[in-house]
Length: 479
Ligand code: ADQ
Image (cartoon, rainbow, N blue to C red; front, side, top):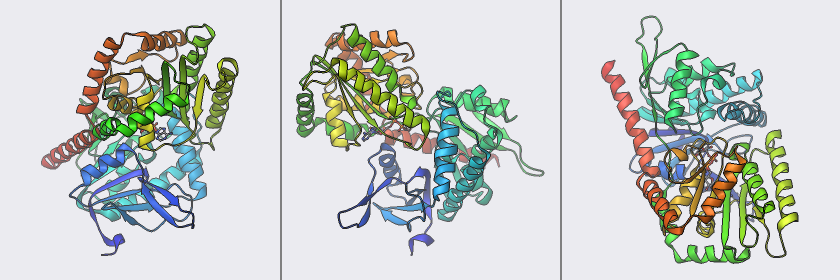
């Protein structure tokens, strides 16, 4: 059967397809599976049942034809150049992203962006409905697609719909700023089950439903009244924190090549006694500026000194067409330049600042090389980097400095916990992570490693789908 006529028992909708476009030397285009944990998890849950993934390819203009990769049908959704600006960069990343991350930078509101958000969500919903078999499970991901549940439900009452929020759900006072807050709640509430990273995010959502939507929310169930002659709808809400592919990461970390690469990395930066590491998308939510400030002050006060202690910061540029991201990049690069001008010597830079995207092997080498992993977001849904570091430390050495404003903090309580706004506190926490006796660090890392190994990304996906099935079954029995 031609790919566009097939239907599937599991349909995923996410802003991006799980592949990267590769162009070889002859100009030949192919697709390579992207390395993320979400993709791995989806593969695991799809094994044995036919699955499809609806998403954007990352390039503006006509969408490529649907294609199959490793047994999964990928269905590209078209975004015009104008929609990339209004739906993706605009409404998703310049309206919703700041509101959902504590308004660290101000949010921008444009009615035209909202119209584009509706139009693109409709396009995703249409594709989902075309691909979903009767009674299929539809799993919608993240803030770019909050209207999709209702748009699918309207056309396809037979399917079960789950929605997962990868980023925080904001406190009601911030969510209230959105002119379209009620429409967004109604869009989401057509799902059978809505999953969030933290209990606090689920609680914020329930409160928004109550206070801004006027819906009844009892326990973890929100009731949406039906139209005339229709029954009420019940949506179930819960916290299902995402994780990483822990076993694969631990296996990679155990390979002799990874250990050798870690030694090479340390050698290449002047063999410091202590290597501090940060790995982030260049985003104002990640607290990169705060951690560099703390590091610079520790250098200025003579509490640490390169080449004895050195910092490696991997910062992948992202969303560069938005002003907030461009100016962040300028500030970070100026700070790195100033620190290096002041404190580096030949062959021993105080900060090694890297922009590249790395494959998993190289990332594992970096994690193994780092004595202290510094994770200091001002707000972060989960932060997978923290969990990846812990999963990679199979010898139970190393230390994790972790912001209390990440989802990961709620599981990794044995980290060196910090409030990144408190620069003095952050400095002291970084020093404690460096100076605490190896035996105490080992005990903490053992507890965290056990935690991350026990709840990996496959378990997360299974927990989500089990909660979704339970919610959909309860609804069917009631109706
Ligand atoms: P992100 O904000 O992108 O994710 P994060 O959770 O840290 O943040 O995930 C980043 C991923 O990209 C990690 O797997 C990391 O290893 C990888 N990565 C980072 N820099 C890289 C580089 N230079 N080369 C290669 N890989 C790199 C959003 C939310 C988070 C939430 C996740 C998952 O903002 O809060 O944890 O989704 O739900």
